[in-house]
Image 1 (cartoon, rainbow, N blue to C red):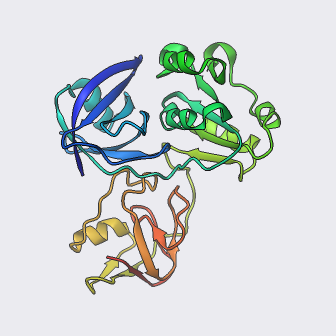
Image 2: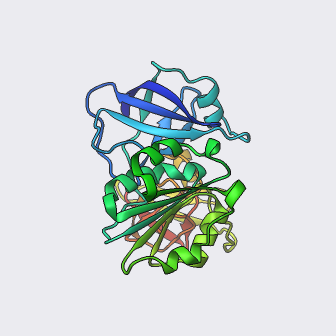
Image 3: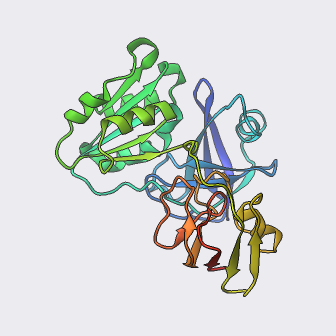
Length: 299
């Protein structure tokens, strides 16, 4: 974990605040556009937020938090109780949504989904354009900042007045080799998936897609470094089973989205239930299980 001090809180939309976290012990860990971090709150909760500042600024991180009226305690605490000067621990940045090389980019943002795309637009330079959707400008964080910095390269769409733009028309206008990065509500991501080819579109979700999996079955996890074997019963997650057996793992979302609980699999066949497209011997035990009776992990 890294130690930071909450340096500034800015209201950037009607229900969104921006937090600037300054390193308490010197420069903070580097990061690239698309990265996020875990923020450990004083009320014992840990939440994940996309970094939306400048990667070149090693002295501070910036994140933005929308107040969720169905909050489980994270956004409510930040909006109601968090004050400047507070010491806060944050994780090293992780990037499950990297900006890949391309001759041109289209960034599609919906509401708070602008956060991972802000540094991407800056990194893309003249090769990137943004279409940013929200009910009204007042509800759209950083809209004024985007207008001032990018002009016509940042199209602000107030869907309450204009409706959602035609994503198929946007797809038809893209130059060859362009990549599309999309983050926002589930309905917007679904519309983007219908309009853009899978190889061209990269998305980041705030919530997992509802999917159906086979019934849970029991399996054994062998911890290669300790030699322990841990039984995972059908009514328990692999993450919880390891924790109860004395092998606690870092965890955040517990929905297969943030990647904080990543494990390396040495043998066996994981059943991937995450949203991260785990491959190359990785799995996320907060939601994923095993297709084989036995998994060997690097733990």
